[in-house]
Amino acid sequence: MTDWIELAECVGMGHLFFLEPGESSAPAKALCAVCPVRDECLDDSLRHPEPWHGIFGGLTPRERRNYVREHGMKRPARPIEHGTLAGYAMERRRGLETCRLCREAHSARIQLNKQRRLAKVAS
Image 1 (cartoon, rainbow, N blue to C red):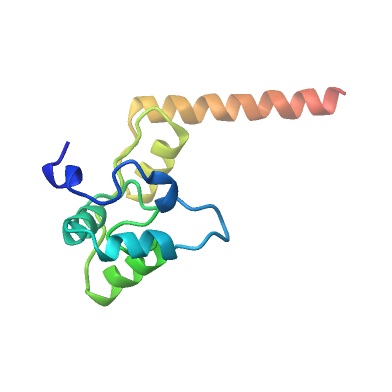
Image 2 (image 1 turned 90 degrees about the vertical axis):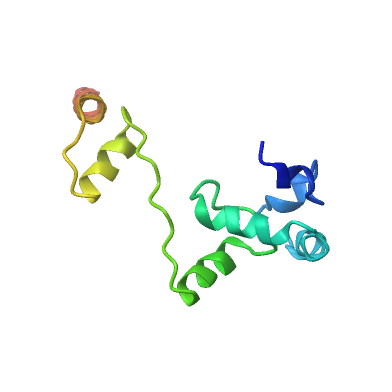
């Protein structure tokens, strides 16, 4: 665990920082405003792509995206989850050669979709 996390005001209060749609971010932001490690928290959230949701360093996800854009920063690329459909899609988007595990996940999904279509036609 990073040392600064132990000094954060929000320790044990995750319910304030991961909001449901429509919930106010004001209580979380008020706690961030007095937190001694707010800058470290914001810096860490900008350097690591996961989790991007939630309040970090006193900013909402939208506010962090704007902060990144306004400061000419670039978010780091998400890691590829090999052996998944998401991994296959990410490799393709990045113009990378797809790995065996991701190709197998893609092929399995194609087969499953074929089976579903055949079952639907048969019924």
